[in-house]
Structures are given as structure tokens and as C-alpha cells.
Image (tube, rainbow, N blue to C red):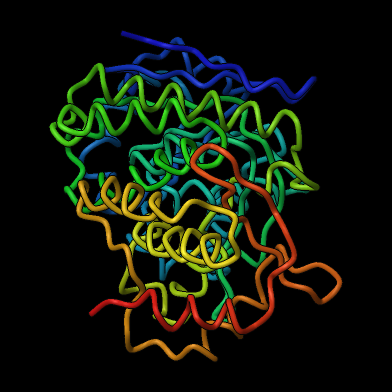
Length: 360
């Protein structure tokens, strides 16, 4: 089973290929390499998938760079390692960067590509569920700063995304679950029928049955592609994709990007957004349990760490990229399948959510 989803952005349009055993198929990536390429990966992914990728690119001028694994390495220092490699190996403006890995490698490599000689081509080869359904699509690239997640970056679209779903078979259960947080998000923000489909296929998804996983990736990518096409640079509708992210990024920042996976933080943040939506009279109260049950079915956390200080979380949220005119904006729910962006409510409701949606 193989799917192709187009991201329609005029001259910057590109395909997302979804299916099994795509990694070593030279017909997809090789035509995007004009002169030479640099494959950037991390030590965990490279051990499994670097050789199969290179086998499909035999005869081409390919360099490799393997970085340490982990969100804490998504920094300017890591980007500098990529630029140093490119310069020391004399890569020109006609080079192509290939990101082989999860969201950290994809964001980092895309950012390096956006900056190197004012922009070179790059290809996304995401190997985690989270990256396949979210971060590899849409051209958001960047690195973290100690004061905020993804605060340094650029919009830079890839030429191609190759989502080989067979790579998901090797993912640790926790990593796969983290990706499901982003899949569930699409149902919550714009497709109640997709949320119901996820609910009806929990067993197949947890067992990573190939057809169910491919369908989840396809439908998620179709939603991401549609939103990106309508709002490439997040001037409006695209902000809806950040459901739970303002809360979640604050949790990641305050825990030093080391305790929780991104998808886990998104799950916590989404439950905070749902709780706040109910407090404001937007979302039906009975949907809290329904949403929490789907997250919980994948072992995802549905409340924030109790040791985090409310004031520290608020301070981190005020550094979020959606802050406009000094005012925080949040993505909240009118109900499953209907999200909106609004100015943050009064601090009483927001504090109540931050203080009460905590782990016991």
C-alpha cells in the first residue's frame, strides 16, 4: 500500500510519499540531488537506516553527518556542526541536505538548509510517527533556546517527504505513542469523523497494523497539507495546528527538554486546552473524559507534572510564538472537530487550569 499526498504551494509544491519499504528506493530521492548531498541523522537512527538509504543512492556524491540523539541537541551548536561540515567539505549552493530521523533532525537539518548560503534544497526522510504526520510537512524549521522551544528558525519547504512507514516498526512504544498525540490532534481540531475512526481502531493502531498506520499517516498528512496550503506562514488558520502546544512547549521548556517527549507534552497541553475550553463554556464537559480515554489508550499522560510552578509555566507561555501585541493567544475547542484561536482568557480561568490539570 502506497499513498501520495501533494502539498500545493505553487512553485514550492512537493509530494509526501507514504508506504512500506520506500527508504532504499532510488527513484524518489536521487532525482532531487543536483550535484551532491549531505545526509544528517542521529546515532540511534543511523544505526538502523543510514545504510539502506545510502544503498539507494549509490553512484551519487553523498556525505554523512551523525549527531547525538535527543531534543536537548536541537541547538544552534548542532546547526553549526552541519554548516561546518558543509563548508569544510566544500558544498556549494547546489547541494541537497537530507534529514534522516525524527522531528529534531528534521527541524535542525531544515534550519541548516534554510541558512546555508541563504538557502539550499533539502529532503525530509522522517523515521518517527510524529515526524511523518507533523514536523516533516509544512516547512517549519528551527532550533530551541534555553528560554523557549523553536524560537529560532525559518520557513523553508522541503522538495520531498518520504514517509517509510516500515521504519515505525522499530520505534519504542513510547515514541510511537508520542506520534499518536499529533494524529489525535488532527481529529480534535478539524475532523470529528477522523477522531471517531481513531477511537474505533485503537487496537489496530496500538498493534501497529500496517494498513491502519498508513491510513492514519495519510489522513494526518492530508490535513496538514490542506492547512499549510491555506496558510503557509501561520498568519491565521495554521495556528490551529498548535492545539496544546502553548501549554506543552512551556512544560518542555521548564523541564529542560529532557524529561518528556514532544508528543507527551502535547498530550498534556491538549488536556489543559480542553479543560480551559470547558471552563469557558466552549466545549461540552463530557468530552473531557472521551478525549482523555483516547490519549490514555496509548499510554500518553493527560496531566502536567505536579512539581512545575504555575508562575513558571505562565512565564514560559508568554514567550510562545503565538503571542501578538503582548497578548497570549491559545488554541481552544468548541468541541471535538472544531478549534479556534483566541486571546488568552482572564488569568483566573487560566490559572485554575494550570493548577488543577496536574498528575496526582
